[in-house]
Amino acid sequence: MIANSDGAGGGPDAGSSGCEGAGDEEAQVIVVGAGPAGSAAALHLARAGVDVLLLEKSGFPREKVCGDGLTPRSVYQLVRMGIDIDAPGWMRNKGMRWVCGGHQAELDWPRLGALPDFGLTRSRHDFDDLLATHARATGARLRTQVKVTGPLTDRAGHVIGVSASRGPEQEPVNYRAPLVIAADGASARTTLGLGFERDGRRPVAAAARRYYRSEARTHDPYLELWADLRCPRTGRDLPGYGWVFPLGDGRVNVGLGVLPQQRRRRPVDLRAALEHWLPRLPSGWGLSEENADSPLRSAPLPMGLNRRPQYRRGVLLVGDSAGMVSPWSGEGIAQAMEAAEVAADIIALALARPAGPRREHALHQYPAEIERRWARYYRLGNLAGDLVFSRYGFRPVLHPRVMASPPVLRTLARLLTHVTDEPAQDTVDAVLHGLLRLVPTPRR
Ligand SMILES: Cc1cc2nc3c(=O)[nH]c(=O)nc-3n(C[C@H](O)[C@H](O)[C@H](O)COP(=O)(O)OP(=O)(O)OC[C@H]3O[C@@H](n4cnc5c(N)ncnc54)[C@H](O)[C@@H]3O)c2cc1C
Image (tube, rainbow, N blue to C red; front, top):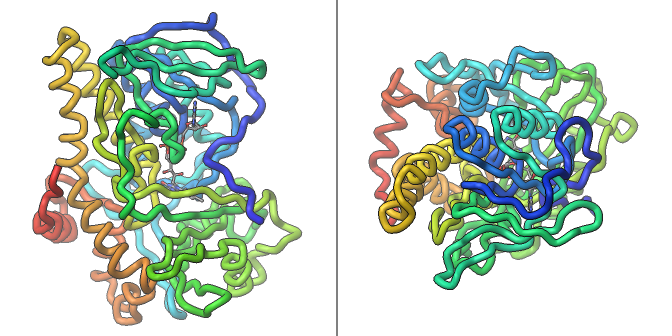
């Protein structure tokens, strides 16, 4: 069995963040969950001078099941937030290495206008702690070991805060605010009972990861991705890919993510698939049981913008709680941080208006802005997932002819990771923007 985790486990509360505050508290905005979505939202709000409470059920530092890979889009957000990415602990990568059908290709991140030309890795154990600490230093009131149990609503059904249990004693407590950001990850518990619907047609993928000590790979300058994994039971192509991400601290993060297989109800056995794949990797990498540095853990990947609307009755959804994981790649950190910044900007402007219809109108700009920026990209990704990835995996896309064509591969890599600039900086940007313009905007 793989230990299943919905994200964070309650870890020890080291350092400054802690279960503090005097019980019931008030703020202008409550953010539920201090993952990348919640901490980024709290930080941007605090920067805008908004009084914000950031509630997190765990203590920091704590584990979060993830591949720990950050593309240039994530790096861009970290820099915007003022995170010191030159400090020790960050491992830079210059691109991705794709392996498929006996071929491999290295694809460097492009030099664009705004996006940096490198990616990063950092274990979520450190990463989430760092972001939450930074949000706190910017002015957000961080309360850890506070588990939100549900929304508080007024008679009209508008949210006026959240109920929670606090600390090891699970003391019941209420936090009040006219606006709540649900950044509580895949569980999306805060949204229950508020009429946010999950689109049942959108698949929820599953992914698992394990850390290994590997001096041979820990300083690899590329994120390595294997696209031709097979199901050990049937021998068919897996609808997903495997990764080996270097962490630079003597370890690598090894894992795989898969979409539910079309026409097959049985979920893929991630442990068996990993055990089937690892012997294909060079033995010199040392990815063996004796070098394992953690158990194998799995978690769901809610993707394709699967929960709508992203604003209703005083609650905004950001990150995994809105199913913002990319259906192209399974990444969700950049998407969570970008949407958090959009949400924070819109809230700051909305709060400048008096409570009532004018403020509500401003808040409804959040789903509109999410649609404007990303709906076409997600829609095309959902289509690709339904028609290709979930049926045949990535092997048909990474056909030997594609693997042998650097321009095609570069375009594909930029599409999968959404590494494009606006306005277009190069031909690939122009091609991708043109392609996305052809996608009809989803009905709202
Ligand atoms: C195996 C795996 C590998 C992945 N690899 C990558 C990768 O390499 N790169 C990438 O970009 N993405 C990756 N992802 C996706 C990425 O992990 C998520 O998209 C990202 O964490 C979403 O951030 P979030 O803040 O929305 O949610 P989370 O990171 O899940 O944060 C939610 C927070 O809310 C807290 N919380 C939950 N419920 C409550 C409650 N009731 N009260 C208070 N707090 C609560 C949780 O403790 C947690 O801290 C991977 C996912 C998996 C499962």
